[in-house]
Image 1: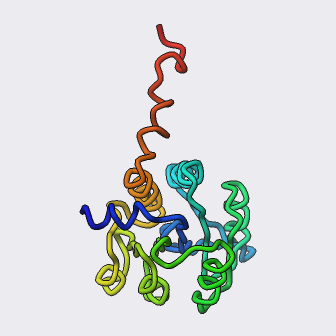
Image 2 (image 1 turned 30 degrees about the vertical axis):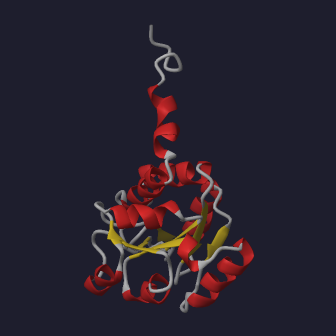
Length: 181
């Protein structure tokens, strides 16, 4: 585990896939053909904490969805690439625009389309219910499945490795702030 923490300590950018990572991978359509996605609120809070810890966030998804656009806007995630059947061009653009090197990048995926990036980053993460080949090539696996806390697992791992997690959680435990005697 120390090797994973060492890798996580250097991360400046985390890239997430969406379907199967930030969602459970289910595709939900209403009668009009409008797509609906379900995101976990604890994952969202983890993403916000990671941003507070100074880590950049990005999304690279093979599909396009207004629900993703809306959720990422709400979370303040500005690096959003949708409709990327080949995810490598977006990955390379992020490296160049954010001036990071592969060892400073983590990627969180669940399926084989994520492997081209996962094989190039400093910290490759598979969600708990990822495809077996993705798990085989990941440095680390989350405890929770995609859309059910996996993103939070990643956020807390990185914040812990960088010595920032306790500080970010401390104010929630501040008795004075909670108005208790």
